[in-house]
Amino acid sequence: MKTVLVGVGQADGKLTTALSEFDERMGFGAVLDALAVNSASADLHPLELDTLLIGQDRVKGHGVGGDNELGAELMQEDIGELLGALDGRVTARTESIIVVAGLGGGTGSGGAPVVVNQLSRIYDVPVYALGVLPGRDEGTLAQVNAGRSLKTLLGHADATILIDNDAWKSSGESLSDGYDAINTNIARRVGLLLGAGEATQGVGESVVDTSEVINTLRSGGVAAIGYASAPAADDPADNVTTVMSAARNSLLTGLSLPGATSADTALLVTAGRPETLSRKGIEKARRWVETETGSMQVRGGDFPIESDRIAALTVLGGVERSERVERFLNRARQAIREQSTESATPAADKNFQNDELDGLF
Ligand code: GDP
Image 1 (cartoon, protein in one colour):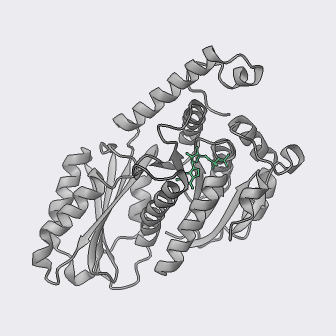
Image 2: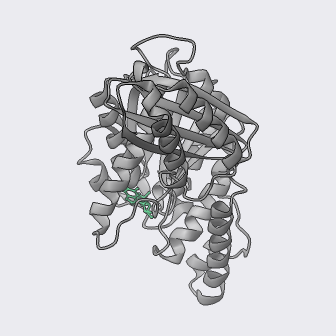
Image 3: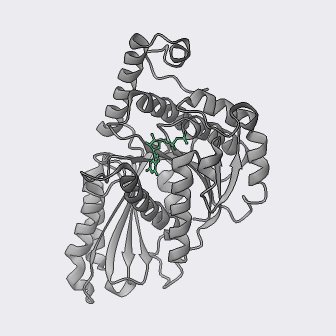
């Protein structure tokens, strides 16, 4: 899927870089262009991407702290510059735009919904959000910001792919080592998803194409991506269990939003050397995905790739009714109530005056 990436905020500059590098290393050519936007100039400097600084008049390149309402305002005020910067990057070849955002902060949390809203009005291609949920031990403000940002994104994006920052956390890890591991995991999943429609080696009717990805995400709402791989034998007859266990693990242990396996739609992409892929295993795995997700719309396809392993990449659409998303939204609502009783400062009061999750605009 030929895509233009727009990263908003600090996390997103790093993630956009990781995604662009993965795509380049794998030689997919799915990432056509990438732009990182921020209100903090220090976060843009280290990036080897094209960058755009917003809100210079108001915050002088110092960022917005955790104020996502200010993040949304700055983005709104400078949206013309962003659209100008994207002009010429989004071309007739572009099949989707992905706006990447860490939902718990300020610039990305507030700015990404504004960007998604504007881009989906202007461009005909789907505009997806790739949103990172804050970890459980991030503070109340991060939960509130993420709740409001997610609610706003859901109203404007063609689909919002969610990544839980607690998904790949291992104990004893520093925050930045942890982020590096998470970013690598995200880049692999999203990078393979984009690359899946770009398969160049081996042709056959079972090879997945971009329209399968777009149709799976068409149900809108929240989406999640799973991934797992296992060593492959040379004879496909010996790979029935391998395919099956890769598919199971991709949902049960490798999902970007752990536990969110009830879905409206699903796509199971099986990657590996074409001559090693077991059709019987793929059929079995697909039936298992149908049962596990409760979805009647499970698509499937191969991703021919030179590797001594077999990998399963799963995309789930419409997982917002899952327990994981409900738990997160309840926590954000709870955080808003706590903030409104605890806080006495006028600014915070303005932010959290409602006990329900309000959208950002
Ligand atoms: P912003 O620049 O104001 O948008 O805020 P940040 O991007 O610094 O942080 C927003 C949220 O993103 C944080 O609450 C974290 O949950 C998350 N975050 C920050 N850095 C990273 C990163 O490198 N990787 C991931 N996965 N999440 C991050």
